[in-house]
Image (cartoon, rainbow, N blue to C red; front, side, top):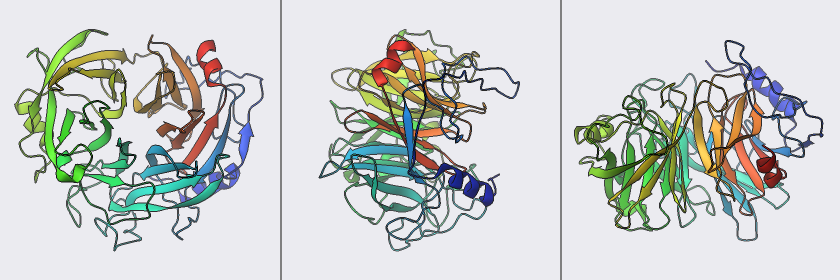
Length: 440
């Protein structure tokens, strides 16, 4: 159930959007608790007196955008801030494109405020584009995609646009699979352009999308599916620079026929498993059966595939509900030179120790560490760093809602992240990143 509006307005007023909070050097141990009131063994962070974002010593945050503000185009900032990408502007501006995970027909969700540009005029999900100067002052922000639903995460293209993904499902918030139109697609947003007519990328598949990432060498696109019985997908574009022209959708299959489920068939940490790809014959089906098509050909189940990011050494992705404790897994996929087969490796599995629980959106920092957004039922949700050696360090915590949309500024010095709701807000975090990583 959504929180009453008066709570959102109260929180918004207490934050004072645009003000920065710098934390002192006095440390306070966070004792974030689960429903059983067990303390989390996380690193020391300093309590934020405004109750928004706890940070390590020497770090500061600034709220740059929040629910219900009036934007440059006259529309209100939507709620449910989710996946996000960061881009460079023509005059060194910092540009963010942010998803809004608004479900159609959920309680009183409105119709599109710009029906002439909407994919589906009955839906009000989409993206907002935010322009900032180098001092993180707001220049302008406006609606940049509309008429979509449950825009969860996405990913940047090599040509610097944003792919926004619909996490539509027949069983999610009522039947969002069919509304005014068919839903469950990806949409492309140009951060340098105003609101354009939304166009679905149907060849990339119709399923419960979460995120996309582009292989920097082949141009192939990897996709996660936020479903308990989902698959991990590869899309091979016909034209590596134009997704509208279509392509082939495939699902990952282990060469070991005994591995068809990455939780029920336990995987050994850091073991390299050969895998291949099977074709999805109908990527735009009437029913929600893309994963079933893949499984019929031996494709493996990944439990709630979510965060996804490409790096020079491989593609990393998260299964939020996977693993022996159902608290999350992190995988790495490395393609062979022909990009028709590859190796998959389980690099991390969350345990019942509270250090990391229910990983969701992910990104990579300048050192190659994964930066992970948590989405769990614990009192404190964290932004977590994971090094290649398996070292965990905690960057931030909040008790309001899940983290989402973590991404770095073009110079790598500012981490942008979203607090999902109540109210949704985008914050910018700055501080001595190298020191944090070494001391943790």
